[in-house]
Length: 345
Image (cartoon, rainbow, N blue to C red; front, side, top):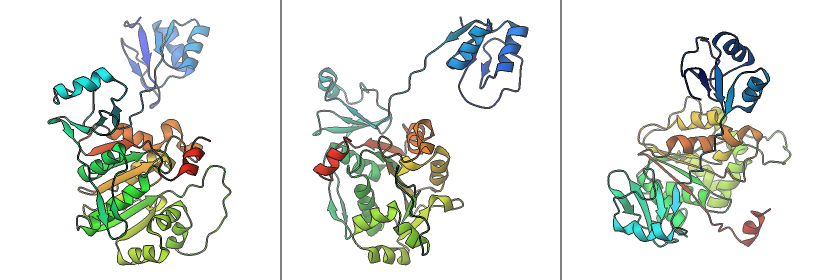
């Protein structure tokens, strides 16, 4: 059916401004007038994935073929070979052979946790060493499982790391422990946290909050997170006063630049649109360490950020396979039994 007399209709894009349909002309958007034009002037049929366009064509006597597009599989940054005995057994035969089909910097859990590898386009599969973060704020923080081991490795190795997973899986603690360890070891000078203060789904807004920008931030989810992890509001205030820590509402981040001496941590990224997270990530300069995290499966608090409109999902899709990017979706919940059971609600 894909001959010179058919037009392939793609989804989205700008309105068509050229009505000269020739051979495999690709349309970015079709409205009823354009379909009628084709039928009246070119006797052109349509190959489309848009059911409304397909239906309209059939009703108006235009030949059409409906194609079905499957959603691409979720990119978690990890391939688990535990369920594929044949592939797991042949994995070690040649570590230069990308049998699992990994992208650059994608991780492989070979046997359920004891053997973790990372695919490098030049070196092949490289075994991931267990790391830890040490700081005066958090003490010694070590990975609790293979997936956290991957996160530790990605943060140290890559310029940008995306961490996803359920509440209580360690996304925030690992991010802050890594940042403070890097700062104390003089690798970086400052941690800048960008946040979008979205109210939890179903919650009622309490209204006006008095105080300056710091006070308002402390009354939002980022404030709850920092107080819980650092344990002391005065300590957080001292870090801000000393210039070690900066808290910035995403609404005010336009015009900022995060230098190569800073760490940019964007928290709760599941509550960002594509445009908003794009704006935030564009703040990162050469050499800046960037950590983004969130839970797009169960903690999206607004319809503004659902599905294809979700900034975190889109960022992972764009950055995956890049030399500077690593991504890991954590699995296990370590906050406690109550938290684990609550995740099933």
